[in-house]
Length: 149
Image (cartoon, rainbow, N blue to C red; front, side, top):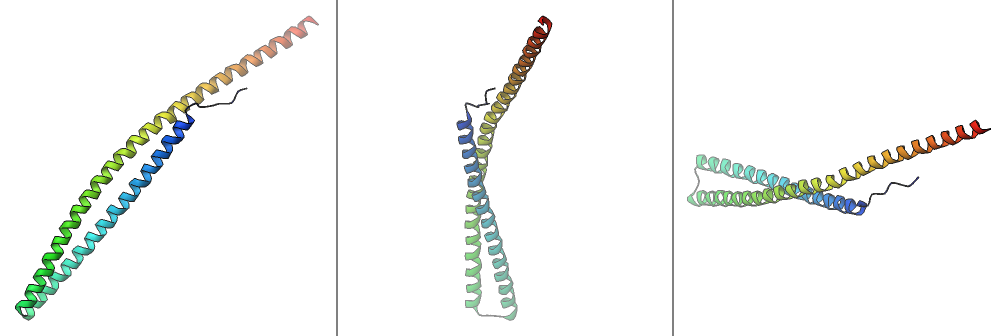
């Protein structure tokens, strides 16, 4: 009885390794996207705090310099938030592209896995046939030997 051997095993292993690497890269990008979203949430929270402090200062009556200072802080914070949103947009594009690469690699790997499964099933059928032929030959020889004696 010969052992099952898949000729494309090294290719399958390589494709699986590529898929694992792409999944790892995708996970890192997703992590960075989540970090950037958290960072933007924190910046928005700080912006709201600045605006609330500015409103309190306006009610209390403050100097023009205080107004200008708050206005500059709020403007700078809005600018920073816009920049971070652009970076987030870029990261999301990278994430989508990497996701497509992962899907393509998964499809490619699954082709080789399905081919291996089909070859394994064909191997099992051949083994079953050869086993049945062996049993049939054994029974025929046994019957022939007992019939002649």
